[in-house]
Length: 413
Image (cartoon, rainbow, N blue to C red; front, side, top):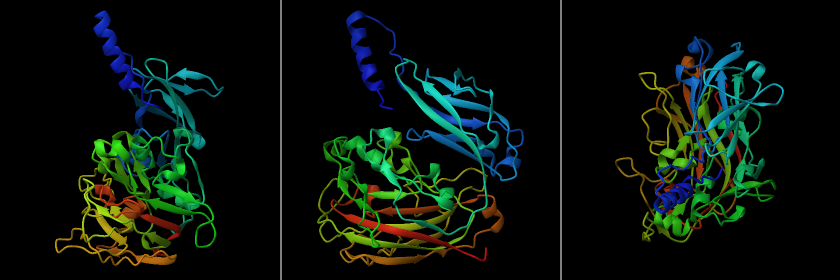
């Protein structure tokens, strides 16, 4: 939904000056911010106590709770935190919208999807959500992705493309979708056409003649310069991109990974890369003697700390967190202290010709089988057209092509 609150506040302020009116404008937002279920024994039905509560990013309109495969779920008390002044409604069995009151029990038996409608305080806007409780089911560990399931995002006026996944791969993808920075790019260049975004599909251009994925490092225009985010690296990953906080803290807004019950041992993909002409720093100054590089990585990390709190890696620590126990990544140069080294002689080996690359996972410790079975580890699969793109550094014009990704897991788990 388009956020109209700033305009309403401005108009309200002008009206106050003209008519000496002190009334505040009514809120135009209609989002669910937090959803929580109330179980008497959550640790018996879910993997962690905190799994009963989910913060809902502004771009998400479907919320799934995961329970153990033996859990018997019926009516469950539910609480919603919605934006100020908004009114939540629940669709009844006969298709009628009824005002929902927090703490009311909602029937989630048989994995039925319950539909909610949130109406803004000013009654001018509404948004629809789906909430479901799903049973965790055993799945094979190996996964393949070909980026052929894409469409224009219907919730964003078909401004940019989105990608879904199928089969057992859905298990490590929030709402079954790949995530990328396209929603953030829309904020800086709303005039861009769908094929001008950093992440786009290329029908028929993969190494096998199918569709492939193109990630491109793009200039963000005048708005990007104003907020000192002058380029956008094309990206693709499993997790969440919270576009509502992208301008305030882009690194924190990019949250990586989902629980995974298998031990990944390698990732392979067909790759092709065209390098942009000039590497630039965050201020868009050319950096002599440096060329840009693409990135591909797979991360396996402990998603709970020593006190039992949730751990969710984001752009600040996706490759450096102490909770990471396994990492596979395209080769790059590093400084003596382990920091990234900018260079004119990259060693990743990706050229303008399609090649298959295989990266083995390197573990610092062996995954614990009991922790694994209780969703205690998360898996991240990520790609970027500029390996320093998270810091808004890179070469505009980089093009990174990806297809036929395959994750292999230990068959002796």
